[in-house]
Amino acid sequence: MKRFATLDDVPLSEAWAHEAHEFTPWLAANLGRLSEVIGIPLELIDTEVAVECFSADILARNPQADSVVLIENQFKPSDHGHLGQIMTYLAGLGASTIVWVAPSFREPHLSAIRWLNEHTEEPFAFFAVELRVVRIENSPMVPLFDVVERPNHWDRKVQESARQAREPTEIGNFRREFWAHMLTRHPGEGDPSKPYAASSRWRELPDQKLAIVQYIAKGGPGIFVRCPRGGDDEATAELLDPFNSRLEDLLGAPMNAPNPRYLFIKNLRLDATNKQNWDRMADWLHNEADRYEAAMKNVLGGTA
Image (cartoon, rainbow, N blue to C red; front, side, top):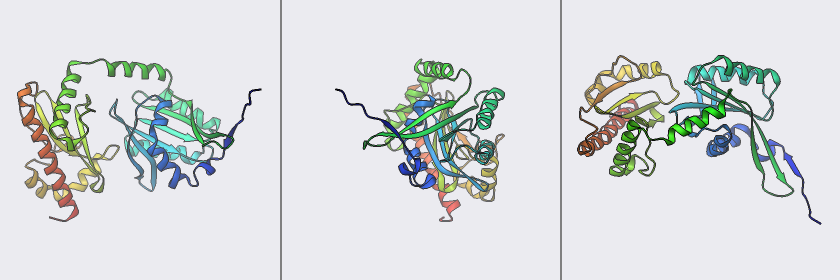
C-alpha cells in the first residue's frame, strides 16, 4: 500500500530564532518568494530603514513601476502597534505598496487594510500576507506565504501591467537600447544583459544618504542628486545646503532647482535619437556619475 505522510506546521521561532536578526535578513535575501505571491517584482533597497524613532523592516523597489515597496513583518498575530508603524512609514518613506507579513491577522486589521484599499487611489496598494512554515516528517522546512487581503481586481491589474511591460513602445525601445549600449561600454555600471526601459538609473550612496540619478531623454542625457528611494527630499536639501558653494564649484551645477528632487542637475544637449551620439552620451553619464559620487563622498565625509 502507498504510504502517506502528514504535513506539519512548524513554529516560526524554530525556523528563525529571532525576527529582526534572522527572519528579516532571510526575507530580504528571498524576496522572490514574496514577489511570486503578490504578483510584482521586488528588488531590495535596504533593511531596518530609520523613520524617526522606528525602523521599517524592509524597503524594496518595484522595477516594473519604479515605485517603493514597504515590507513590515512580525512573528506574532497582527496588532495595533504594527498598523500604526505602517502608517508612519507610509508617510515617511514615500512607499506606494505596503506588504504586512504576520502569522495571522485579526479581523479589525484586515478591515483596516480593506478600507485603505477601497479609499486610496492608485498607485497605492495594501497587502496582508500570512506566513507559516511546514514540513513533512524530517524534511527541510518550507515557508509559505498566503495573501489574505489585497486591492480589488489586483490580479487583473498585474496581468495588464505585465502585458504592457512585454509590449514594446517607441520610447521604451529607445531607452532599453541606449542603456544596453551604455552598460556594454561601461560594464561597471551594471549588467548589460539586463537593460530596462525606465528613463533613469540610480546609484545609491547609503553612507551619504543620497542617490545619484542618471537619466536619458530625447534631448540628451542628464544627471542630478536626490534623496535615496523612499527618502525625504527636503531633508536631503537641508543636508547638502551647508556644502552648497563647495559642491557647486566641484560639480559645475547650481544646487537649487524648481523641484527639490533635482539637486545639482545638469544635462548634455544632444540628439539622443541619433545613435552616433551614444558613445559620447554614455561616456558623459559614466564620467559625471563618478565625479558626482567622488564629490559627495569627499565633501560629506570630510576627506577633501
